[in-house]
Length: 193
Image: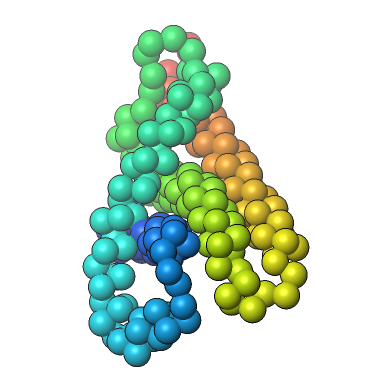
């Protein structure tokens, strides 16, 4: 896996996290459009500030999402590898020595990381934006505030569930592919077994 790819993944995750943190902060405090004007006026400094904060925040968010989904991940892994002795993808890649397989597993890991972090971020964005709009919607001049809040909430729920579905689907495929590649490799190495 390319270090730049992981950096970009965590940067995107961190920027999404910063967005819902800001919505919570602005939602529970006095807010006016002039507050945003400061960010726009100092956009270069704001960009540097958010970029430097986004990477570590992205790492923390990904770790939290991994922790929250760990039991579910273990249940999925158990389906394909029952018992104590689990075969790791690292072991498979060391034994198989295939660049194509390495690229495939890295791609699947990337999808898993992005989907699990997005599910947490979309969930938190749904809550924070709903709170923000409920408190400050009238001051923003929204004509049909109830419809906007409901639409925002429903959209956020759909995005959260969609990213969870993607994470689950890719995690199933990842564990299934791990055991499949390992078994195929073992069959090639020991055809009589």
